[in-house]
Image (cartoon, rainbow, N blue to C red):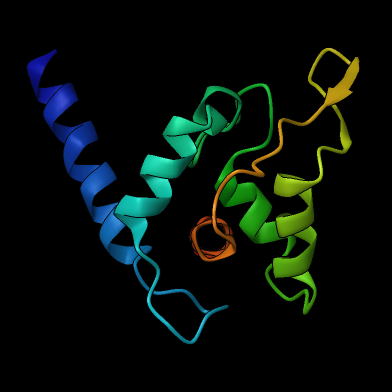
Length: 116
């Protein structure tokens, strides 16, 4: 079991390292800050980085918006405006909004999501 945990930690570290540069931003993404924000706002409760939970994985979100010129704006609105979202079991609820943070920190999270 310890080996599996070590491998997970190593893979997460590598993923964070690769995610430090975003194809959507001119500046590097601060992966540590994005992960810290996602954890503090409970984003990772419903979204996995590469694995679907109640909501889509960030890797699948990045894939959907890979060539979309409006990707940053769409995801920023999703994160900050609390639209209704359809969950796995089919019911809809309001997406938790992040509104009490500086826009730069939220955009860093958006760029990190799109870098997955």
